[in-house]
Amino acid sequence: MISIIVPVLNEVGIIGPALEALVQQRGDFEVIVVDGGSLDGTCDIVQLYPLQLVRQPPGVPAGLGNQINRGAARARGDILVFLHIDVELPPLGTALIEAALADPRFIGGGFVPAYRGAVPASERLPLAVVELAWQAGPRLWHIFAGDTAPFIRSAVFQRGGGYPPAGFASDWDFAAKLIRLGRLAVIREPALVQSRRLVQNGVMKTMLVTWSIGLMYGLGVDRGFLRNWYQRWLPRER
Image 1: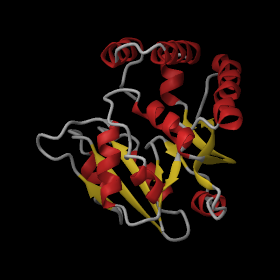
Image 2 (image 1 turned 45 degrees about the vertical axis):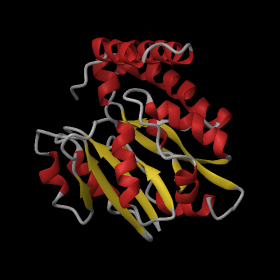
Image 3 (image 1 turned 135 degrees about the horizontal axis):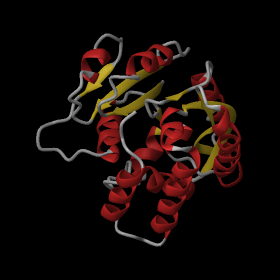
C-alpha cells in the first residue's frame, strides 16, 4: 500500500479541488491529511472526503516536519509519499511509484515538476526558463524537495530517523537525507505544481528570493533569519 501524506495549513481556497483530484488515483493507497492548526475551514472540507484527518495536538510544535512525522506514524503503507496541497500527481502517479520501487535497488525517489495554471503573456518566457532550471535538480542530481512529491519506503524512512523537524527548510533537509539513504528513482511524468503564487509574486522575484535562500541555507545561515527573509519578500497569501 502507498500512504500519501498531505501537510496543510489554512488552504481552504484550494484544498477541495486538490483532494478531488487526489482521490481519483488508482490502486491500493490511502490519503492522510495532517493539519497544522488551520483557522479557515480547511478541516471542514477535508472531512468531506474518504481519507484520514490528523489535527494539530495542543502544545505540539507546528511545522512541516512535525506534520509529516505525525502522518507517517498513522500510515499503514510500505511506501510513503509527501505531497504538497498545490502539487498534483499525474493520473497514474501511484502506479508509477509502485513500478519504480518494484526494483529493490531503489529506496525512494520523486517526480520531475512542471508548472500549471494561467500565466500572463509577460511571464511565460521567465516561467519556462525557471521550470527548466528547476527540473535540473531531480533530473541530474536526484534532489527531491517539496514540489517534487518525494517518496520513500516506509522501513527506510523509519530507519533513517523520520522527517527532519527543522522549523524552516525541512524539505531541503529531507532531500539531502534521501540522497544519503540510498539510490533514488526519477519519475519523468511530471507532478503538476500550481503557478499562481509564483506568478502573483513575480516569477523572477520568486526565483531570486528562493535561490538566495538556497545559497544562505548552504552557508548555514540561521533558520529563523531564512524564514523572516522568505516571509518578507514572498507573502504567504494565495
